[in-house]
Image (cartoon, rainbow, N blue to C red; front, side, top):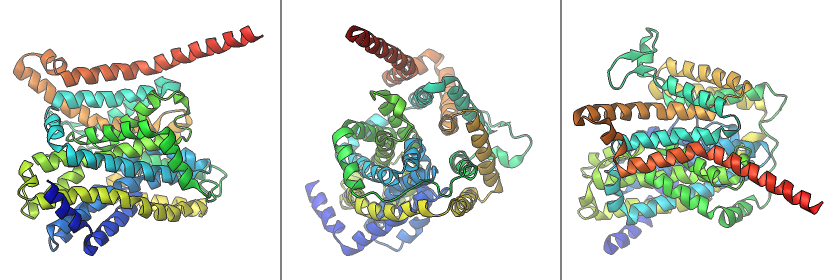
Length: 509
C-alpha cells in the first residue's frame, strides 16, 4: 500500500493532473450552482473525453467534477433558495435565511468549509476502511433500506414541530405525488389521467426547482424589494466562520460527515437523504432547536458536510464490489469499465496505482476546494447586488432550461411551474415545502423496497421475519421511534425549563 501511495503522490503533482483537478473542480462548482444541471449530468458529459486520456488523469478529472458539483449546489441554495443539486435541499433551510439577514458571505463560507471537511472525512473512510465498510453495506437489503427511508420520513416530525399537522400533510402530499406513474411492483399506471408522459412519473429535480426556485421568484416579485437581500461584503467573514466551526461545530461536522459517508455506501440512498438526516440529528441534539430554520451556521454545516461525505461513501462499494452507491458513482464505474478496469477488491492490487491515485486525488480536490470556492463565492455573492427583476428572469430562464435538459420533455417544464404555484400558495397557508420535498424524494424508495419486502415475505411465509428480525432494522426502528417522540420530549423539556425559571424568579422576589 505504501508503494502505491508514494506512486500516487507522484502522479498528483504532475502539472496536467493539477490542471485537470482545478478545471474539473471549477467547472463542477459552476455546474452544481445551475438549477437542473446535476453532478451526474456533468460527469456523464465528460466521460467520453476521458477515452483519449490516460485512465489516471481521466478519473482524477471526473472525481474533481463530482466533488465540485455537490458543493456547488450550496451556492444557489444559499443565495436564491434554489438547491442547485437535490442534495442541497436541506442547505436552503438555514442558508437562505442567513442570506436575507445580510450574512450571505458567512453562509457561503460555512458551506465551503463544511463541504471540504465532509469530503476529507469521506475520503479517509474510503482510504482506510473500504473493505469492512463494503462488507457492512452488503448487509443492507430491502428491509433495512425501507426502514432507513421511514427514519428519513420521520424527520418531518422534527422539521415541522411548530405545526406538526401541516408538516405531516405536506409530507403526505409529497408521498402522494411520488406515486404518480408506473407502479414499480405491478407495472400498472397510476394517477396519470390517461396522459402518457406522466407514466414516467414526476422527476425529482424539476419538482425541487419548482418547490424552491420558481416559488421563491413569485415570493420575491410579490415583495417590495429591489434586491434579493441587502448585502455588503464583511471584512474577516471567512476567519469568523472558520473560528465558529472550529469552536462550536466540531461534533456537528464530524457526526454529519460520518452519517453522510455511511449513508452514501448504501445503493440508492444519496446526498438528499444524508443531508436531511444529518440536519435533523443536529437540530434534535441542539440546546435550542427552535432557532433552526432562522439562519444558523450549524444547519448549513450539517447539510453540507453530510452531502459531501456521501461522495467518499458512494465510492466505497463501487471500487471494492462494483456496486455504485450513487448515480455519479455508476457513471464513474462505467468509465472504469470503458478503460478495461474491473472494480473489485483486486483493483487495489492489480491496478493499485490507479486506485490510490484516484482516492488521494479526492483528498487533494477537497483541499483545493477551499481557495477555489473562496474566489468563486466572492463572485457569486455579487448576484445579490443585481436588481431583483433581472435576477428573477435569469432564475426562471435557467429553471426552464435546466428542467427541460433532464429528459428533453416539456412535461418537466410544466412540473416546475405547477410545483412552484403549489409551494407559493401552500406557503401562504403554512404548508412546509421541505416536508413536501422529503416525501417526493423518499416516496419511490419506500414503495420499491416495501414491494421487495412483501414479495420476500411471501417466499419466506413470514412478514415478521422480514421486517423485524434484522439487528439493523431493529436499530433503525428504534431511531424512528425516537425521532417521532423528539418533538414531544423537547416540548416537555421546554415546559420544565420554564417552570424552573418561574420558580427561580419567585424565590428571588
